[in-house]
Length: 374
Ligand SMILES: CNc1ncnc2c1ncn2[C@@H]1O[C@H](COP(=O)(O)O)[C@@H](O)[C@H]1O
Ligand SMILES: [Zn+2]
Image 1 (cartoon, rainbow, N blue to C red):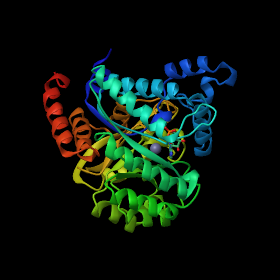
Image 2 (cartoon, rainbow, N blue to C red):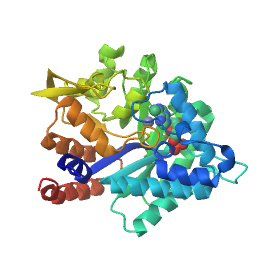
Image 3 (tube, rainbow, N blue to C red):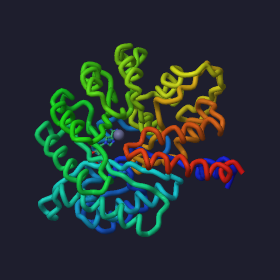
Image 4 (cartoon, rainbow, N blue to C red):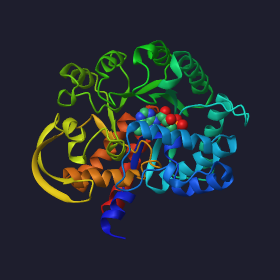
């Protein structure tokens, strides 16, 4: 194994944007497919391989296929435990999973038992001694409308009170071209008022400017993607100002955006824009094109100490892991290992768990530093 590979694996990491059913690995898919051979589902229907891309619409079709494979408590337990184990093996020390509770009449699955089962998996992993702290965000799928959104928030509220700090927040996700965010405001406001944290997919596609303007007034505690917030991408300065004023962290998922074709190439990823808002530091940027050619050019980049963090989104569907995402950013934007360390450490301040957990994680990072930079 080369030193680079070892560095990124050993780098302690925080993962805050991981959709459970988008994070199912090839190996776990294999087990699910053998449980349900009659569905005739193949790997090409559940994952987007190296060098491949899909429209965002096609990505959402992929999730429908995966949902067919994961429709019993037994499936959810296995998937959750495998995903947690895989993140732990990848060096993730703190993980916030997110998932949309579903009910399946055929298998007797209810939304409550769906969440209960994920919580059971988190406990079992803890009892196995896995070195990872896992929390859960309950997701609202935009496609299901405002009434379901309100139900979801009420359910999350119950779990927040009964799960001993495991359920920490709400995610708003699903096909961004469906529905308008204004319909979800009452549910999101309720969530916020009862103490649930909010992570909202915002401006993932163009034409959501008005919606983002509205939802940023909540304000959310974190933003997923935010690809089209800034003026160069058809957003606006007023959107950027709101994000900066409220110091709202962005969760950035590079591979997801490239494979889902909302960003044409890594070098044009909005990572760069948000980086440019910080301290003045000129560094060298290398640009990876999708056909794996590599070009190098100079670019003025200023470090931003607070606003964004690298995440996987759907590590199974997009065939990536968090170590790869860090490595990708380092190679695309020319960041040193020290800067990468800082990036992973800064993510601790954006977690939704209580302050005591942040302090523990900061101590872990301190303790692990000599081992990673040996
Ligand atoms: C690619 N960008 C994305 N944008 C918006 N929502 C996404 C997403 N990727 C995943 N999801 C949301 O997560 C669900 C799958 O996991 P769960 O069944 O909830 O665990 C998808 O159905 C979608 O609602
Ligand atoms: Zn997402």
